[in-house]
Image (cartoon, rainbow, N blue to C red; front, side):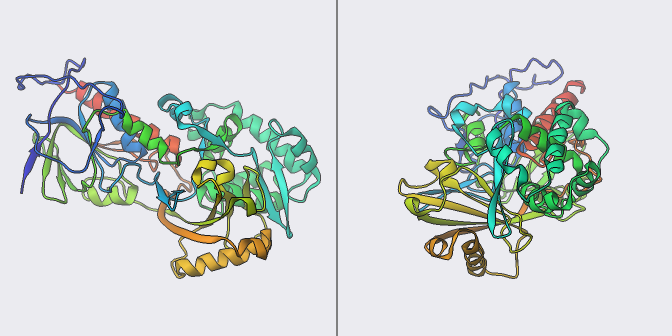
Length: 478
């Protein structure tokens, strides 16, 4: 067994963190990724004693925790078990196409994201503010009346919902906009389906619009997800745009990682246990056998089921509800042969078939494919474990042939299937969206299962875990 102690470089304003035993202090000097890469492939023995904090998991939550620590000049090491950062927020390049690992849309009104991210550098590509719904053999438009007034006016008589339903959408929008995020995320809760019925929405608009639209966001067509999350997302949608970054959804974690200090992120470094015992410094054992030691604490920033295994016996998270799952299937086609050019999300409002939603990704972001090719993204809810990738792809082609015509869809070329077992934590009531990240002194957790199951929730949870660690250390005498 090799024991690795990580370098301490902590010029910190906190007077209660004792570093007097170290002969030398070295200030972190974060560099842009164009000069120094923060990422290395595996640990190597350094020359100085210990680091401040070890963060396990380089998804959005772990990156947010590392970002906050770095802003306070707290040294850290960010461990990632896989070959790249991002966690569930990953993009693969396949035959010149950018394939996000599952259907993921970034809403620009996320409050924490606005503080952390440079939207201009992400080059966010906007969706149409609404959706096109397949029902009764044809498409019907639902549009945001403040952004697409004429489209909204034309849709008043369509069969997706009654005039009363469409007025109710407006009043629901006003209702969430008058409430703070804190109030929304701590309000009394019911399943979303119960909230919609209580507000007076008809069965037709619930089945034809809310189930496929919010079901696709929550990966929950039954709409059992908490009304707190519905209200938060509804507010964000009212204030912002649905987008994807031009370079793929992975551009979001990549931007955060690029700001971290050189060598602070280790890939292919899987943690298998965390040791915190009385006055012994916290340590993390890797699958490779190395043991990394921390002076200030450990933040576990992995998915809830993985965190439960890693922290078994330490009062860590215990998943009580089955995770939300999804399958995303990609196809390509000649760009001049696709049936529409709109930047719109298509929803299945028919109540039949396996497709929940789909869109032509290169219509929204042309950079998602080669200049002459189109990329089609199709999303299903659930894992469909009893069916092979080929069987699912064939079913999707058959189903979408009824949407766009058999002659068109039969020409699509299958690219890849992603089965995402843990797409989101299950956030059916009862929920606590402000869970304490502290497991014990020196050990903290973060992830979207502690807050809201959104990009924003993951970022918030990472910051909260780092803040909690620093607060604990500020209250501990040297």
